[in-house]
Image (cartoon, rainbow, N blue to C red; front, side, top):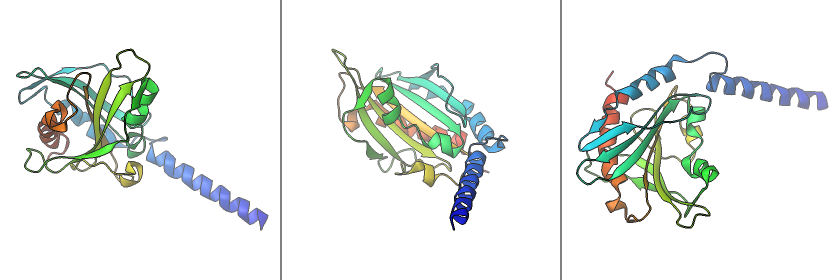
Length: 213
């Protein structure tokens, strides 16, 4: 019985390792993530009254095959928001959420993340994101950030409780961050430049990332 138990455990571990290796393209690159990542360059610099500029961004985790980092400024109000869009295999892209990543950079969430649902009647379709406010730790005048993030594999942006499980069956996945500096700003979402920018951004992403077949 002990030998049977050990053999069963070994079989499970080997199978799990093979599945995980295929999931992250450990042995051979899958064409779908690279094709999806190539579409990132199609996002225009000008989105309505928002004008973008490219930001530097370090290489993402293993399995991330493309990324786009920009700052968009509203030419009328002067408000700015930052956008980070990454693409790759669902395993690596579904993890590393900003409430965890920014904690390692000296920011702590001021409250647990909540869901933000796009209002009806926006120029983009229905969408849902996680959102969180973060505050710099240990600073005399702490910087504050408000971040929205979500995922999409089909054109619908969602904020599942377990994105790794929710998107495991897809060949490629996008993750979107939209954030602003909240220092001195209003805490109301209806006055948040991110919520003003998101509908226009998603309408453009729908066109360039998910073109009709």
